[in-house]
Length: 297
Image (cartoon, rainbow, N blue to C red; front, side, top):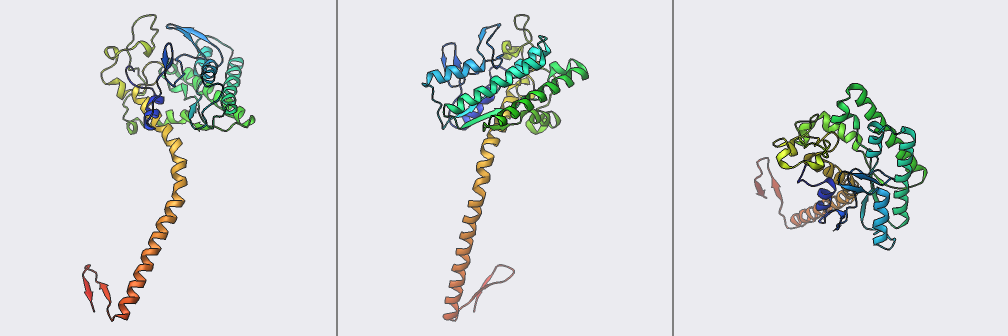
């Protein structure tokens, strides 16, 4: 929902940086393009749409083929390939197989170039989108089945190729948001926040302005259009991503924290014992009664 940020921008801001677009004269660090299929360059209403394969090649070309080992990368794709099945009649087996192979290849290329931290989100449960709901129970079941098939194929292939990634389960996360929207400040999980213009808009929130958005919808609806998230949903996704990245690190701190606190308490007890022993030598003792009053004998 324009003019809100994408989840990647909110996540980048959390770490004190930015994730502005790269391409069409823009020189940010976010090479993603709306409507992109994983391994196939296409063209949309606003012109050419580079695939993630092209995006990764463009990035590596700009760095001399080396990926910053300290950077966090996200390789997320496949939804538009599934839309080619549901809306364009593409063959499911060929389409999913080609997209998964391409995505695994991109993770491999980044890894070989030196990347150590690659976040790979699953596809969300597409059966919960307004477009899928419009197809009734059959449409919803198809969306869920296609996303499940893609996710399973992708992570099986990553494991088979011995590629280490940071998994981000957006499939079940979306289900959680739909089941408990109030926990995320969302009130509408079935409708569309954007009331878009006629063609070439095609119902896409890409062409939606604040004037053509349901009042307050950017921060209260889950979906901007038939498939895309609103600003509120992007914020929730960013928080989810940060929790996945930070959670293990914080858990790793717990043993150190516990041992540090334990040592500190031991030192306090030891100091108290030493003080008590000194008091006995001086014929003095300090006691505290149940009221907290201190009495010296």
